[in-house]
Image (tube, rainbow, N blue to C red; front, side):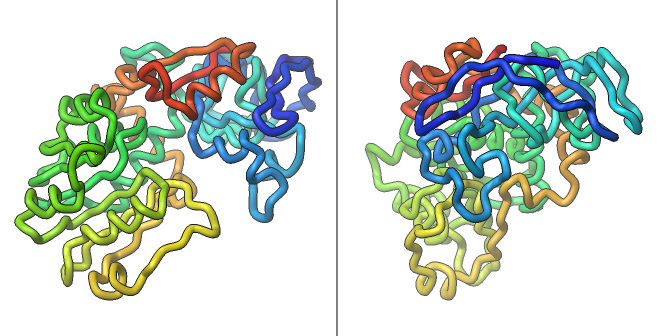
Length: 331
């Protein structure tokens, strides 16, 4: 069948086009897309920085490239060998097989999860993939009673992590950012302390809060060498603190390991979504969290765009203008 999709045809240039979807193969379903989240991990692809570089997804090997992987949709056709799904099921999942910025896509059924029927938020907001990533982080760090936990960054993923951690029996939950509106949300989600790095020395503030000891868990979401050094330097010394790498890092990022890693000796936890040991289970747990109101995702989805507005949407997402936190495309 034919569908409408937004293909990246050059740096910062999407083109809306009609394409022919391939026939469903064994184990695949056809999804009518309801929404697709805009993920910051694809900004370097949009900018043209990583197209064709070694190790990137097959979707980014060359132009035209397929972006969009946080899909919510409805199953409208089923291939051979598909079990546990029916036409009409609302689903979300790890939709990495094609273009999520489209009206339809084919996806392997093993990558999908049904959206609970009694979930109380709008279907278009049930972004399973980022919720799965948050559950993966929470599973890996295993928060202990009385831990002091630091989160660097005040974006969408950081704030969802705050919401999740607020339900654990920890002592301090500290968030460093530089957007007052987001830090206010972090406080509302359960952060015990918020620090605006634009108006004070974040390292000194964390040391004051922790009585000069540092934290048991330091989670880095900002993805810069400066923030990574800060996260490492605030790990509690001689305690096997956990340094969680939750952002995308480019290959040439400079990082001095001697002082921060050798002397403080943290356990380094790579917590990118691909490190999940069971993505489907993590996603089901995340949807349970949405159902129970643990993850207040609707408060964070600030912008919604038509498929025809994809170029505008990406620019707003990257510049974070007009109070932007998270955007979705509605084809």
